[in-house]
Image 1 (cartoon, helix red, strand yellow):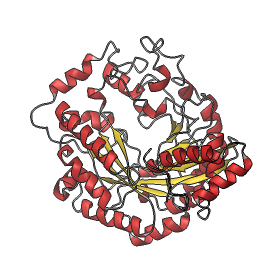
Image 2: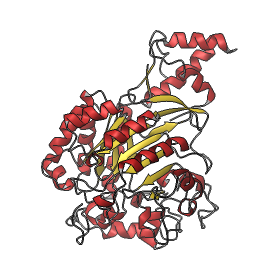
Image 3: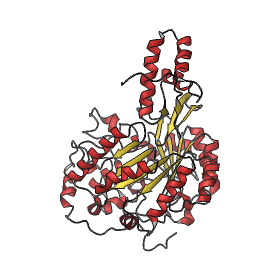
Image 4: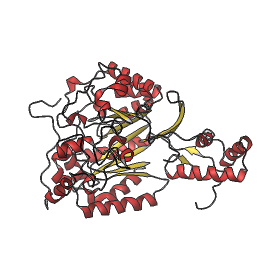
Length: 374
Length: 93
């Protein structure tokens, strides 16, 4: 938006948002889930009182927006209570949900608690394919009902579509569905290839031609729907010349808290070796934000190698994504290979070349075989 | 910009958009779905007058009475700013 003075906030500005990944339990099994490959079990989740304290600490620290996510955040029975505490502290409250368990009663409780906005995910517009991708029969129909419930409650709705080679042809229909549902905002978000998404990359990565067609579709829809529906578009790094500003820079704007309470600069940070992430059970949020070594490690620009260090975009993209750098080069401190200036950039083209004509079967998100589902 | 805005219209924040003062930053903030920004001082003056009752013309009158600038100049600046926020889904005009 315009009139912004917050885009290049100094490192010790307060965090703008707190992302509460409340649980890894979820009725869906999407093969691109952003949760880590090693999922937290239900019995290890933070308790209600700790979350209430963390919400108070977040408000005092200057957090403005609370994103309740998961897994499926509605799997936590205390969600309305936590929303109410956040709303009482004047935090903007957002729930990111699959919607399949959002019934009338829960909707009423969330409205009463002061929820500001709900983001609802869709896997496709074609029900059978949507249910196949999410790994749950009947899910798509329940999502449509949830969307109607959200709108009938008078709440603004974001329709989120994660797109990939197995649904990308229907992006025009996705935007039509979002409009028909009365969404004030939609997200057309290409899969990001970490964790489960990386594991399923060949089954998900679209072609260059599919990406370009989708980009054109989104740009046309943005012009047509200006003032009625905001469309946020997230592209895949594999065809990019410059990396994305992952998390708007490491530990610059967001704090992410895992189900067990570990404070992270991003949701995938636990995939990085050599880090110890402290728990909000043990350390006040303000201390973590200001001084935790994991938060300081890649904050700002001092850590950057060349070609980032002397790049005039270093405070635009902040060196890209640390987790992608590690996943694709084995070194989290290297330039994100999504950048054409990275010495490792060829790995992106190699991945594109390696995707077959037909997508392989999905490896669905699941708790590890040794663990019973929590 | 295509045409002047209707000064009889009443600007409102869209559903899901909140405008409030943040004591931690000592600054006004606009909050919405996956959106948060700190408006600059002139924008704050305009946004503080959006109360769901005051018309656009009334907002311009108020600013013209308080700031030393011709009304037409203020009307132009306010129009550009609010149209931008409208395009981005933050206000309705």
